Length: 315
Image (cartoon, rainbow, N blue to C red):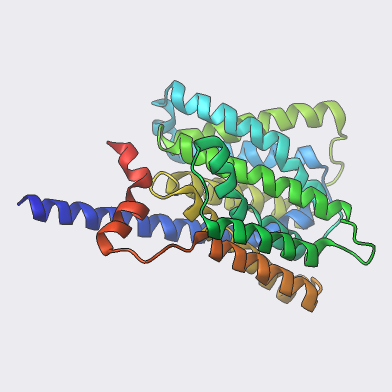
């Protein structure tokens, strides 16, 4: 009976990890289209009005769907949401502003570098020393970034620099989300983080930006996509999924957003297709895969490593 119970528990853990992986890939697909929506939004609205609309609308949607769960939340969810929401407020403008100076598909490849940065951030925060393949991945990321962003004068343009700043910030965010998600209800944490980001952005917009004088359909649709699909759906999927899988595993699956964004941008939005950008993007994606490569282990060891990182926190 004990053996059967252990086998059933392992199967349940595998199922949770599989569902978490599916949720992360779905989030990556949503974000792939989000780069296009963001590029359209910045043509009509200012940075903090975009962020205020996006996150306050996402918070409202979360409350309408999960209101009962949110009302039962305690200090842990509020505290985690406050920290993550404040981080969002400070580094999300980097991505929005960067889209004024670079293309969506190019930014997507640059942002994918955060997946290779996560193991090093985890080293600093959680004292988990990266393996050799993580260092190799770091070198590959630098090569890929160089191909994508360096111009003939060997300098990085403003949009690319801001995108890289967001990439580093998001690596920190992924690690912190993994820590908090294992200690509180991720739905409540998501709601409070959206609410904090939205309120801080609204205050900033009212103080320093002019209120939009027109609301073109394309701009409104892009804001709706950012609020509903990119935030209420995708970020919530990430926050819930990270309760059942590791930070580095999360990063590698989410980084596939760069490929989805590149395909959507080139096929439907007219982004330039250059061999140099494609090569640099593929090198970054290779770095992400290398950083997550593990030695062969027994099936039981795989379950132990991949399935119980976050599940064990439930007990």
